[in-house]
Length: 304
Image (cartoon, rainbow, N blue to C red; front, side, top):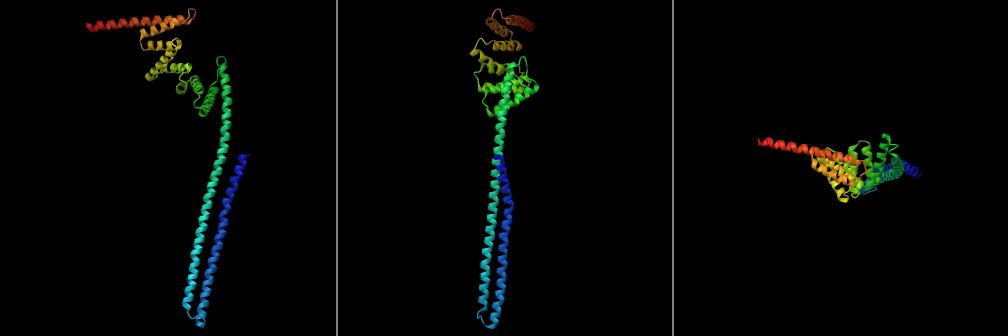
């Protein structure tokens, strides 16, 4: 209802702008008619003065003519000022109307825009509620590619309204991982950790992504996060596992074996994970022996 009232108001204003110049044109016509009559009266009176001078009625005809001329000249500036005043008022009205139209149009746009924005926010919240409920059954009923795209759009829209929502940023990172969009996951996890640096899950997930990167600076950042996790909880098996694999990858087999050894002490005897860790320790120790043998052979070659 408000939108249509605003539209009607704008229409009335535009109509006024259209008819206003016609009203002013009539006023200008009246001024022109007055000027023509004044000139006609002057020339008629001038003839009468000359006739009266010839008849001897007027003694000083020249003085009378000068008075007539001065009277006409006095009237011309008055008309010019009136015309200038009319033009100034006309311009002022026109500018004022333009400003009014702009203000009304802006009000209409803001009114409709705010209504649409509010409606979009409500729809976004409803979609988020649906997707948050859906991911509870992700293991048995995973989201389709289309649903992941819709979820990402809904999260982005919500984060524009609530940019400090760490959980929202973390969830957007999870969606990025599900979509194989590493850049989206990287940026979203980073934002979540910045907003909630005490959250162990956010930090661990982000560190895992960084450790998979081929960029050295990313790996260093990942190791720093893992070290922070271990300072907060030295029994964090995931952090120990990632550090052990990184050491093995960097051919620091001694450190890899030691880190896996720390894990082995924390894993219960009946946990099947122990066998995997034990095999990893054995492999690291074998690689260390081979590395030491190669180093010894290289020393002998240099001594020859």
